[in-house]
View: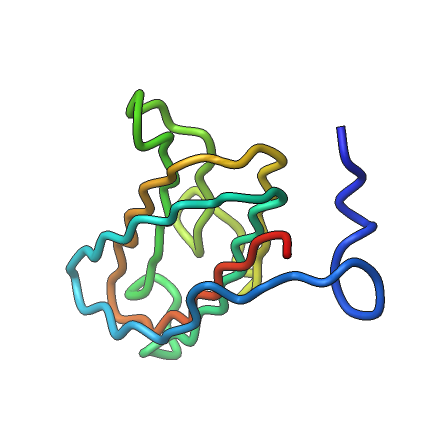
Length: 115
């Protein structure tokens, strides 16, 4: 198993395969990622659309695209913390399906993989 700390700035390079901002107003978006070389790093930053955190929420669900099994889930508010930036790391290559669901948030999503 690879040590995820070996990757990133100044160490082993990562390639950004997706970097976009989504405005979510009680809706969902779906993406697919075909990761040829591990690791697969998912970073998101949430910008709430209201000063009241009860009005804002975000859930990112990541599934194995072949089996449909949930391999990761993280979010903002509700059952998740109010930290606005979060990272998830997956150490296996493969096909992933990502579902973003949000209410009153803008979300910057960055996907990176091994070079």
